[in-house]
Image 1 (cartoon, rainbow, N blue to C red):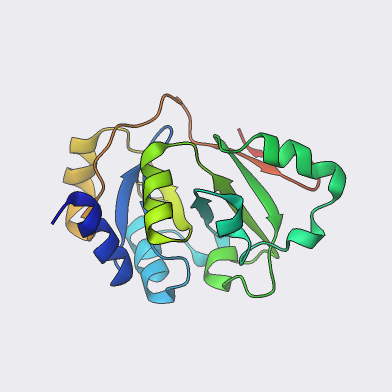
Image 2 (cartoon, rainbow, N blue to C red):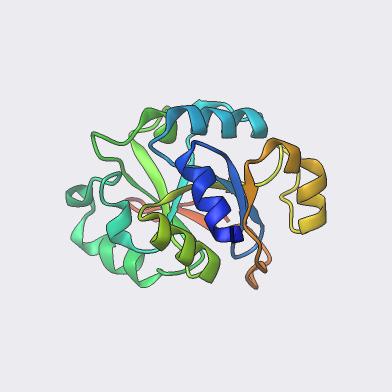
Length: 184
């Protein structure tokens, strides 16, 4: 079985995976599987109230989670011209977006990634993935595969191999409605 097949099988079975992103290794799972999301949050020691980012290959993969009609027309160009890319946008959440993803918010953070491994995973899996940095809450994000394997490997169902992208910081997070930078 290839690495990708192992990762896809892990996702289908509710596992938590790690994969390379633009700047750091990410932890991910199926956003619609509450048990998988809770397992990811337990590994990270992160409260569900904080919400999570979804990462996708295309905006259309995010439509079930985003209230597309609530995005003002004058904001759409800035959002969509930044994708695929290294900017996550906080958008109005759809009524059906799981609370275990949105946390205490009525919005959802999403990104269409340009990273080839993320593109491949989301396209093959057919939907977005949860994306949060591979580290314990409050600790530095992991950028080294060996460190990832040693610190979190035993808690993960699979690790997708691949090089990190060229970014030096995790994605910028911006509020789409106000333009405010939530995380630079």
